[in-house]
Image 1 (cartoon, rainbow, N blue to C red):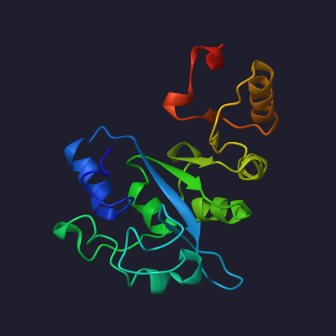
Image 2: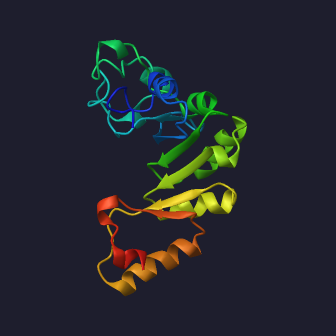
Length: 193
């Protein structure tokens, strides 16, 4: 709701939303992994590349956290955001803990255990986060690792035939997804039935 006023998921956006509307209960951030060798770290940034939302160039995965945080992630949005940095998952969890629920979209599979570990390390309760992903495998792994963590399987399109729709819902139940997410324009009465 505050993306028009602040940069993607950022400290100013979270602070602004709390100041303008203390009743804000959720924020969503897109998580990507970064270059770390055998270690794990993640930043919250929507795009796979830096071009649109920072003064950097290249693929997010090609950089370490320190390198990414040297880029300006706010100037593109306005003068008041110059100097804003790309936050890590750990930083954002610390900021929202006890204030609102963070919806984390896993943009790439095979990082589920590390995501759960980061959530636990931050001391965030399952009710304070929700995992979203277009990757069925990511949602399935999250529900296996931490069954109490709410997870939503995002769908890019809705199957046209009723039997195909039923199969999608059956798969969601099979992987123990808390919900199935679709763009509002894709939900119709037939799907709800």
